[in-house]
Length: 184
Image (cartoon, rainbow, N blue to C red; front, side, top):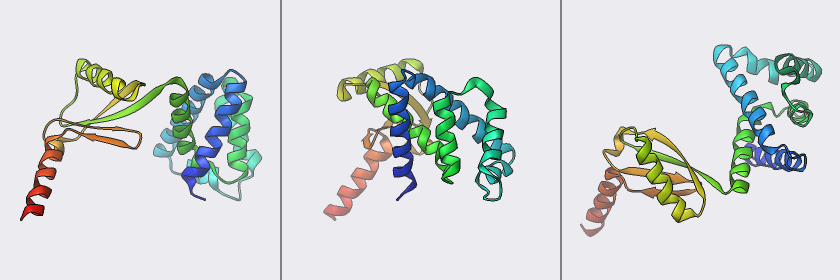
């Protein structure tokens, strides 16, 4: 079974339990804190990943480290989930689990995340206009994340979930190239 499918299963179970406890948003924030901290720690010292995934380090020792780092700031539900990941040797799923958790939370709240690729940094007004336009199309509140991609030349390319809307000059040139090639 692929890691992405497993991560989605863990995320679905965690979200369901968090929702039952009326703590879905709180758990999401805590999960983000864990993911961010361990990503930063791994950048600074790759041995962090080795420690958490090494079979000779006991699961209890791994959980002790997590509890020392986070103390009482994490819910029992999240500690149990992290313990389950460690116990089953699936700690590497944590970033994908967080992403899947956020997708579930967004879906439940009627939100969608839009990756907006543009040749230049978008202004706040441009981001709001794009969010408003795509909100009409999707019927959801759009959260815009701007990614600068100079290869687009101009215009924008928007990805919402598995849909891609290409209004870039590079995209138009590619369509024109394909048409010319087809007609030749």
